[in-house]
Length: 119
Image (cartoon, rainbow, N blue to C red; front, side, top):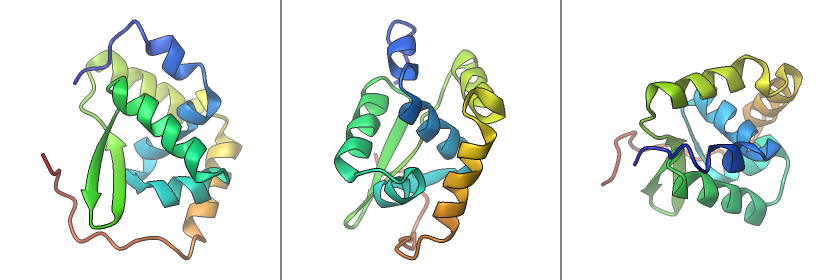
């Protein structure tokens, strides 16, 4: 599903959702627990942000056993440009670096058996 322009600003109005999109752009795919660790936030809040991003067409989920992984959805050119802008400064570089450091040191990271999308 392609993101609609209508909810674009609603989705991007939240700093946590912008941060999640930027992290997914640089990391590729992350599970909910990895995002919880990276953003240093609670699981229900992260899951709610992911649901909003999924419903708006920005992220795509993939289940593997007990884990739910998220990655950027197939975005149109304008959506890709938005994500690039998030990576390049719309999300402060120090915040993104801190999140990536937390992710690097997160001992509970799941091992991925596959990276294929499950329909």
